[in-house]
Length: 203
Image (cartoon, rainbow, N blue to C red; front, top):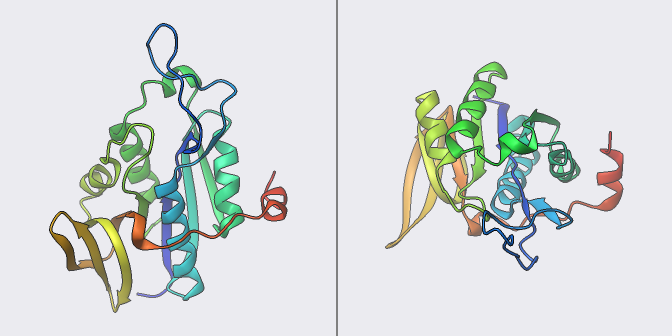
C-alpha cells in the first residue's frame, strides 16, 4: 500500500506550563484568559504523521479538532508543522464541557470512513483529563487493529512494525492497515511550528 491517508487528532488544552487555578465554585478549572496549546501527545502524533509524509509513506495528512472556535488556533499549529488539511468539528462552549472521549471517537471514526483514511494517529492521552480512551474506542468503532503507547513506528509492506511502551519494558508487534495508533512520549521530538508558517496558515 503506498501513499497512506493519515488522520491526526488535535486537542486544544490548557498549556502545560500554565499554573492551573480551580474555580471558586469548585466546578472545574479557570480557562478564561488562560494560554491554551496543542496537547503535547497530539503534537507528537502530528510530528510522526509529517515524518511519514517526508519518507513518502503518507500522501495526505489531515488534522481534526473538536471544540469551540479557538480550536482553529490548534489546527493552525498543526498546519504550520506540515499537516496538509484541517477539519474543525465545531462544538459550542457549553456542549464542549460535557464532551467525552466516546463522542470524539465516534467523530474520528466517521471522518476516517468519509475521508478514506488508512491510519489514525492520536496522542495516548490529553494532559487535561488523562482519559487514555480515544484511540481504543476509535479502533473499536472502526473495527480496525490498534497499537497504543507507540514509541517507534516502521512501515513494512502492508503492515506497521510497532514498538510500544508497557509496564515491563517494550513490546514489539505488527499491525495490519488500516489501523489506529496512539503516540507515546518517546516516539519523537516535535519540530517547532514557526511563526511565519502559523501566519501563512491563518485563514
